[in-house]
Amino acid sequence: MLIYYFHYGQQHKVERAILAALRRARKRNLPDTLTPEELNRLLVIGKATHFGEKLALDHFIPVIKGGGTTLANTHYIPAWLNSSKRDKLPQEVYKQLTFA
Image (tube, rainbow, N blue to C red):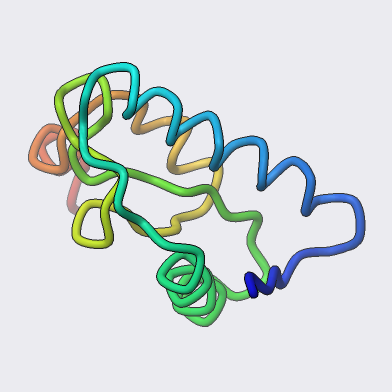
C-alpha cells in the first residue's frame, strides 16, 4: 500500500502528477518501472532531506529527453527547484549556479 506524507487535500494532486509522468513516459515508449513501494521510499527520503518544503517528483534525465520513470532516474526535490529546472539535465543546471 502506498502511503503519502502530505497534508490533507494534497494527496490527489500528487497522485495526478505521478500518473501524468507515467503517461508521458509510456507515450514515448520509455521505461516506467517505478513501483508504489519504491515511490513511497523516494518520498520518505525526500521529506527527510527537504523537511517542510512542498515536494515534486523530478527526473534526473527529463522525460522529454529520454529519461524514464525508474528508481534510478527519479527523486523528490522542492517544487520551486523542479519548476526552475524544467527540462534541463543536471549538468546544465549546475552550470547556471553561481558560487560566491
